[in-house]
Length: 456
Image (cartoon, rainbow, N blue to C red):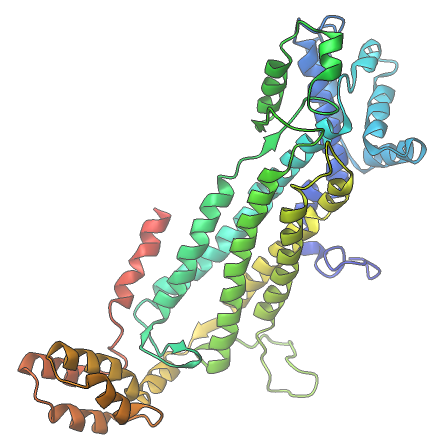
């Protein structure tokens, strides 16, 4: 960790996003450019329509692919050194590869590197592979881990009664497990969409019209060649673009991440509130300090950290999702500069997710406190009573209960005395007399079953 890092992702949080750096760093971008250039060289060698580009032996193909497999910091530094002369990052990759072919049996095909390509042909495919790898290999596993951890809490507390709050005030009881299950269900919907995201790629030249291609080899089926090449990388071919792939798919993906993040932000704030109210107890960690002056403090710092990082992530993702699909005419360079912030956008989300997971490991429901709070909140039964009164045609049911309970509460004995004086059918009266705030939870416990069916 560098104490001189300008961003926390490269300093304080570096260890938490180290895996993501393999996909979304400058090093990863350079490596993926090398990958695309080599894959295109190999693809051309297998197309008889591209006369002049000879076939490659198995050994030559193996050597070319080793330039990707063995790509390291020294390789990246050499490309950056070349870039200092070219002042062009993709051209530097082309020169680097030609340099690596000198003195080998492949020296004669060096001129075919980057053939018919514009830089954006290389870059858009590189970014599509990078983002897909970062999401699938790093972000999604942690997102699923968070969701499953909350699902465990939901299952464990499915029958634990909870005094809910609407507008911050006591409301009809639920169970803690059901309230946790709501988040699980919401997150899983977003994960389904994110994991099924489509990653597009284009490979059609300087303005997307195969201009140079058609001049060099007018009879070659360039659309077919492009489609097969893009799909061979595991991407979806975009057949109609300007110089750049329009980035609509990135906007779609980022909007999915924003929605997942927003649910996480909602969760963080609820957990903070539940801890403040005593719904959850926090575990004190030996040696940890909660306050520099108040020794008793155990602060919900992990949920606060998560909230902060999620906020930064959403700010970046919101900008990227609205900026990237907009480009002047056939292209401008603003997308290139903006896309260098994809790593930080996803990185801050990853840090936020991991912080929330840590927070969950240090809390447990305080069931004694929960039941005591419910026992002191008999007024929440006013909803049940006025509903039964209405069912039985008793006039002014709502107003009667409002006068009895609003702003003043009522005790167990007071509620029982009131119920005993009602002229109700015996079954309805007995049901109300047996009701307590802790048992007035509807079918909340049963609703938790939905998260079991979600995951099956």
